[in-house]
Image (tube, rainbow, N blue to C red; front, side, top):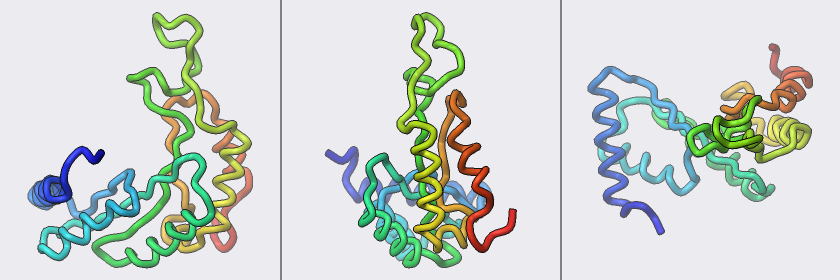
Length: 174
């Protein structure tokens, strides 16, 4: 069940956009969006409220399939103007520390040996990032790499090291 009606969501977004431009913020990176959530930004544009530039990262949960990647690519093509751009993709290697779900080097205080976990094994995550590099050239061209990995726990840097070791994506210099 949605947390709020589309009208309420649109109103909250419009207020946030008004506040941003009021404080002189000219570009907003919205870190995690669903494809259907972009309609709220379209509505704000139609109402004249989209005065800051928006870069809307698209959420890529584990298990995202090829059809979803096609939708991401089409969405990136559709939202590619000076005011509203879709991409990069937001991927989680692990989660956040507050609920003790970030993958830490040492155990959480008072939790025995619990150090949190990762959503992907390191090698699988590196392979996924390489697949996205090859599969989504529109995002690669716009953002350098299509993925925006999120790994607050810092326990297993091998995935990002393996990804970086592959070198720049085709057609890009470091």
